[in-house]
Image (tube, rainbow, N blue to C red; front, side):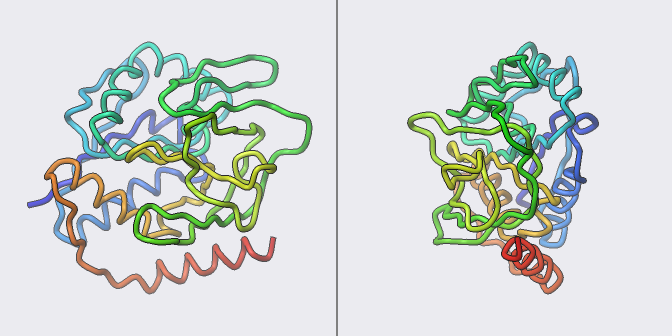
Length: 246
């Protein structure tokens, strides 16, 4: 039986805007298809084996928690995260977790060192927080798709040379409110500012992560059984309409 082994990083600290709902949604979509699902967590001071997981998830957090998490990631998890990415483990990093992927970010006047596993950096610039409903056009290899959610971030993220954005902003601010880009992709790792929680509003992305996780473990991409997604499709359409209204 196919199985997805998910590792949640800092689930207690990095869980604003109900980001934990993304993990529950992944679990349910696996269970509804008869796909095995195992959950593990790694918090402060805890190391992990990069070969023991198929999908890594980290959500967003308050500035206070993010500062602590950044230091602990560098001390206990950076090498494992880099090894997992290089081995094709799927990953989703949301908002604060997304910022932590880059080389650095700023909290006020303080420069925080990031993991440096994705080509991006985050700065603070004059201006208001970037808040509101957002939609982006994404192509993860099977044609353009719409991703919709909610953003709320003071930092402005810029993709460094060689980096690949997750998508193009249709409505909302995106990474920095200037260049029309949102998120980042490195291999099977996806970083984004979209909260919501994101996956219940975008079931297709949840399925993409599940497929990538199984493919990484078994060597072939699975054909996931279709599900009755009437409620999920309605949530997606509502999020897209909210973004279009501005």
